[in-house]
Image (cartoon, rainbow, N blue to C red; front, side, top):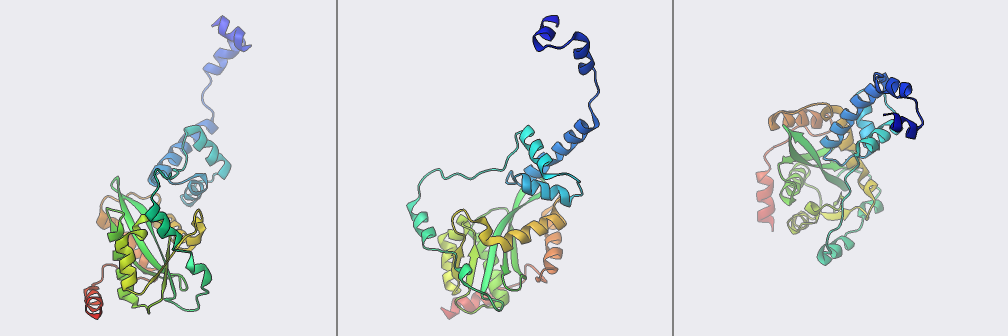
Length: 267
């Protein structure tokens, strides 16, 4: 110990005073806050960086600064998950190149001119659920949503069918989404064509191109999701139905078989 203290340039008395000192209140608070930061990050499926973790904590009532959140995330080795492109896919690249952000060219003056959609993650009893939603850009009213254990084209088609059944839009409506594969799938593209809907997608790297849906999901999670644990899908669905009713959608799960039959026999 004497050699170690001599190398570090401290006295033995100083070392033992530091070693026996109780943790400060700040250190204790940091440890508790860091544990909550890690939980919020994991609930986001490791997608949140420090800005969104900070917003979630503020929503939960934590009086904490953004720089402190960033520091504690660095100390814990926590960071937002980044997506990588692992192999070339010429077909998908060609498809995305042909789908511009058409909604930027439209100054919507009435409902059912531009719809926006997206998919988000929600947790039920430790398992992920995926929520696909469709919103009218002009009115900011939620038109439809669907929940599934799988994030695929079947989910996004179901949400689109529900919105179309509710509003029966005229051909030429623009439907804008991010560049997710569940919107680029051939089945989804074919269904959009059948409905007379024109697809629009984010520009590469421009997440804010779909700001309306991003904002809705952020508000929804802040208002009724963060800080809660859902023990069953029924409990989650009840919460989503209540929240969606306040944003323009009275009911989810209404019967739209008659609409689908009309579509079938009109072709």
